[in-house]
Structures are given as structure tokens and as C-alpha cells.
Image 1 (cartoon, rainbow, N blue to C red):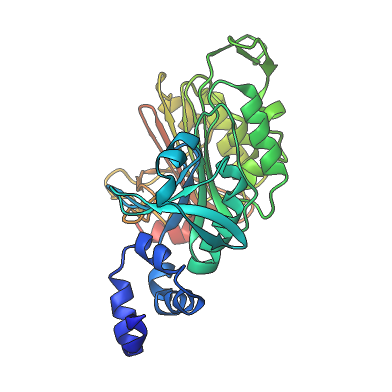
Image 2: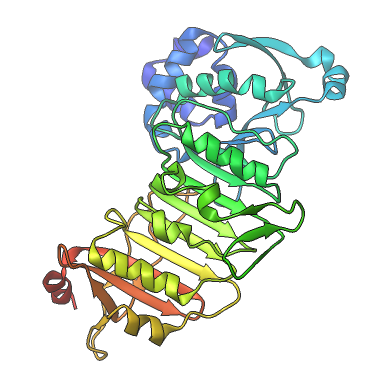
Length: 372
């Protein structure tokens, strides 16, 4: 290939201007080409935020702010294979022969796999060998007839929507319990048609099943041990995260949130009983406003002089959703704060309408007040 006739720096610059899908495509030319891509694009790959496997779209892509860089499309439809049969060609993907064609529209590779779950392990191993372990590999799945999450090496983030089937939630818990190490980020969205009875149990109006959040995700679940967690449960409030979370950053959206749950959370943090690693928590409530004065009084909040500007709390996010996204947590600017008894550490507390924010400072109360 003519590329190898150029000096290394020229080769590097040429490849740097290739789109990811084209780098993936030409990596199959030879072992030397794959080796050149790995060595010459190492800094570029390190700056790549993540590679996403989307099980609904059957797509491998790199997300950016306003677009997706499609690297590989997967098709499991026989009628498509038959229609494009003469366009397919075999490639060795990490020891597995998979048939590909080049899409006329996107110009990216289309792999035929039926079902695609049988080939995802080989596809992932190939990407891992090409892009390396510095890239964050994420699996995204939404409500499907066949709910599937694979065991993939170096998979560090999950984005899951479980739909209305309780069996899918159980599959998520079974998967998390068998995964090691714990995930860097877990996004969990449930969409139940439910109501809450006076015993605090949740019923599925479709299946008639009865569960508490602790039964579905017990305190020892790896869900609560993820470094960062995003929970969206539109039809039911879930205080379980407030009780069991052991990670660093939590982002929660729910329909209802009891004041007592927030009071209990802050008091447990203050006592040093729980949330030792917590850096940032935000809760957005859809329907009811949060009782600001009642909660601040109950948690024994302290206050910075109203005439002074409070310090702004923000820190690097554990998980950045896409390339170009804000790398820092949303700011907390509040005169109210609480102090942890065990080490005199400070946390800013902000309550605005239906929003609750809690940001922990790596400073004692004395150090914190010097910032004012």
C-alpha cells in the first residue's frame, strides 16, 4: 500500500484526518496497517470519550454533541442479506468470520450477524485491540422483546431502559451481581405503570407483581457501588439510592420524593454513617416541590452571611456523556451548608423548587469559610 512509502510523520498526519469508520475499515488491510493505526493514533484514541454499543439500533458509534460518528452498523435481517448478497465479503474479526458490506449512504461497514449477540464479543475484542483500554466502552439498551446485556471486557458504563417488564429489572440485577469490577457509570430508567399503597410496596398494573426497590436491587447490589449513577423512575419514587449508594456522584429524577427521605440522607452523611465517597448528588422531582425551610431546619443547616457571596461548588464529572459535553458537575451556589461530625468536612446544600443539590467539599469548615 502506498501509505507505507511515506515517512512516519506523514503517515500519522494522513491517518489523523481519517474518520473513525474509515480507520476501522482500513485496519483490516493487514496486520501492519492495524499496528500503524494503533501506534500513530494513540493520542487521538486517548482523547476519544467513549465507544457506544447501541443494542436497539444495532450500532457501534462515538457520540458527539450534535451527532453520532457511526463506525459499524449490524444487520440481522436475512432479507437484507439476500438483497445485498453479492456485496458482502468475509473478514476475520478477532478469530470469527463475519460478513460485511459497505453502506452506500453512510459509507461505514455493515456486518451481517444473526443474531448479532453471537458476534458482539468478537466485535468488541477487535475494537479493544484497535482503540485500546483508554477508551470508555459503553453498552446502551432500551426496552426490547429480547433484553440483552453482554459480558464484555473493559465495559465500564451501562445505559439501560427496562420498560414495563419486571423481568428486565431482574435481568439487570443478575447482570450487575455477576459483573466485576463495578461499573464507572450506570444509567437506569424504568417506565412502570404503578401506584404505591400505604405499606410502601409497588404494584405493576400490568403483571400484578409486588416488589420493593430493595427486593429488586438489594443493598449489596453493584448498582449502588458504581462510581456514578443516573436513575430515572417516572412512575415511582425510589429512596433506595439515598440509602445504599456508595459511589461518588448520583443524578436522580423521580415523580415524588418525600422530605423525610432527604432529611434522613443528609443526617446519615453528617453522622459519618454512610456516603463516605460521595462528592455530588442532585435530585429532580417531577410533581411535588421540596419543602426548603422544613428540610434545612431538620438537618441543622448552617448559613454563610447573606451579604457575602458563597463559594461555587463544581468538580469534574466521573462520566462524560459525549465528546464536547460539559466536563464538570452543574454548579451549586448556596448559603446553606452542613458539617460532617467525623472529620469536620463541609457540604453545600441547595433547594430550589423541585431541585435538591448536595455538594461535598474537600475542606473543613474553617477552610471552607476562608473561601467566602
